[in-house]
Image 1 (cartoon, rainbow, N blue to C red):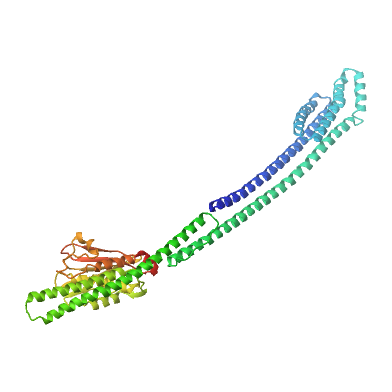
Image 2 (image 1 turned 180 degrees about the vertical axis):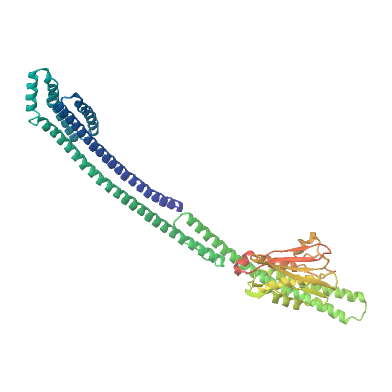
Length: 503
């Protein structure tokens, strides 16, 4: 399975867990909402039942006042109570419709109230209204009153209605309390489910991320170790990864790179061995005839009886050409060895290296050399730094146009590097030669005028660039010359194998 597919599956699983959390929370919320609506409904029914009972009481009060006083104004509460009771009944009828038992009980109450009104209240009202019309009406009303009101018929009917309302109220209160308890339980379950599923999602997601991250980290650590082994010159290494994903492809690429580097290393080792053999041949087989020619010219010069100055001059030129040839061979060999031979790293003082360089070059007393009172300390190959300073200072003395001159060494600190300057007040270098002078075998003057192999600055440039620095010249004709180069504050040891690859 590909790594990206695994990541997608892990993310999808985590998202699915959160979807489950959301769905569970919504379901529990709907239950809570349903319970709350039920509580509100039962509360409204209880409230309306209380109102209906008050309307019945108004009807009874109005009837009683009229029967006692005979004044029609006392019937107003009766008629208003009856109207409002009918409205309340319609509202309660719609509210209790979902509950058949409660609705049936409500209709029974309505029948009881209607029976009280039709069989008790209305006959008494009508009888009371006719009392003063005829004596027989008085007798009829008195007998009716005694037979109904005095016997508690109206009270019995209304008590039955009130009892029905009481049953409705008690049932609704029971339902309301049950819904409140259910709401509380639903809220508790909602919180528990939400917290539980959230914790589960967090744990699952964290565990999945941990396992996936640990697996990827472990595999990348192996690849990093492989890369470090390659960087340290150990190419006969390989990783095994059979998961067939993107990291496996990268691992395979590293294995191929290591194999190719190993083959290149073997090839370059062979080439360097042949180059060393060639250098030995050049040093031994070419220098020996040159020394023989030089010795022969010297013997001829010593044995000659002819004092012809032209012959002695030609022999001197011959010996100079032989010496130049030997110096040229040494320069080529030095140039070819740069970067192929690993030198020890040391921490050295530039002040001491400069002092040693000047002592070995032994410039003419007529030259004034100015050096800083304080120079930095560097960690790197001391021999190579000495070689750079020696070449630059030697050129400053050698190519000066007069017997007296001034050479100054300066430096300044840069981020990660030191920048050094070797300045002289010599003849200067025209701008068109600023690049050319760093090429191998390149000189500004004819070799017959100024003896030179044209290798020194090439060696200096190659050394500095091998260390990660750079060198350039600032000069104009007849205005002196300044060579500037940068050198790392700390040079990291580079394995010989890597140097071989770069060479």
